[in-house]
Length: 323
Ligand SMILES: Cc1cc2nc3c(=O)[nH]c(=O)nc-3n(C[C@H](O)[C@H](O)[C@H](O)COP(=O)(O)OP(=O)(O)OC[C@H]3O[C@@H](n4cnc5c(N)ncnc54)[C@H](O)[C@@H]3O)c2cc1C
Image (tube, rainbow, N blue to C red; front, side, top):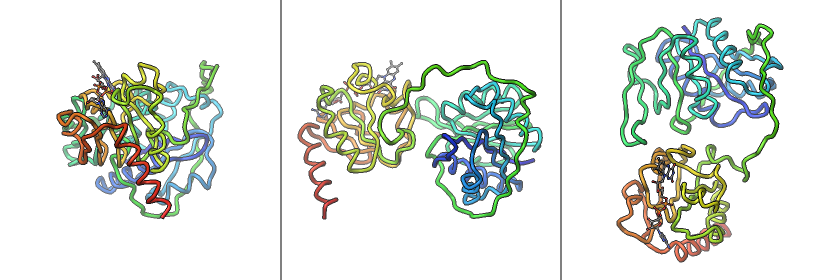
């Protein structure tokens, strides 16, 4: 009864998320006394696949069927289900991102498997099999018992540290089990997210709210993000106003992120906003209202006018970087 981890790739390359999933799967397999097997769908080179070995993955199943392009959850579900059957998988792990959210419920129905969406840590016990996830916009933690033979876990990004355990993986190229099926989906247009760094991948995020007053005041936010090697984000009203692009909006109805450091600047800290960022390791709030709820969520806070505080912060950082 193995642990199968679906390792997403982006144009044939893995990202930190894939290694996080691999680390999690390796640890879980150890708890279960079984093997962690990585599943890779689509064209990924051997050198790239071998990188999973660094995180303890000793066996990799690679499916390179041309029909796996473009991403169609129906075909991917079939491919993952066929790999799970082949391996007699007991647990299937994937990311709790848009891809995982499209695949996991379909797979759960197909395999009659219980699912824990958005797990934040390893199961606290495997018999019974109990996994924790955040609920009520991140304000509470639910312990979910999965009772079915096959179990599915989608892991919240950045909630599990990378664990290096280098092994030399064996790569097996297998049939995707699509039975000649192809996707009826046709891509008409691809809109790439602006900026170099994906918000969901960023270790540091500098985010602005309505307290920034207008789109013209975003210069220092962008500069701070650039100096720190981070990404920019915003609250929902900011993207609704068109001050910033929609893909930057974090929160209950936007992106859910968990960077190491999150700057909330001119953001009140409404529950719906915190739902998307409360898993950040450190939150730094800058707000001119000392009673703003964001200070309750933040580890560090500056009470002050962002238009005065930000330039000083940027100046100090620029100086520190030049020394
Ligand atoms: C169903 C639903 C879903 C929602 N989903 C989301 C979501 O996903 N994400 C989200 O963000 N919101 C969401 N919202 C909206 C949410 O409730 C809040 O209205 C929103 O987060 C407030 O955004 P804000 O903090 O930028 O603005 P405001 O609430 O207007 O707060 C601005 C803050 O800036 C401070 N400020 C003002 N001037 C300055 C200054 N010069 N310097 C420093 N600070 C200053 C103020 O003190 C204030 O705290 C949702 C709402 C609903 C009903």
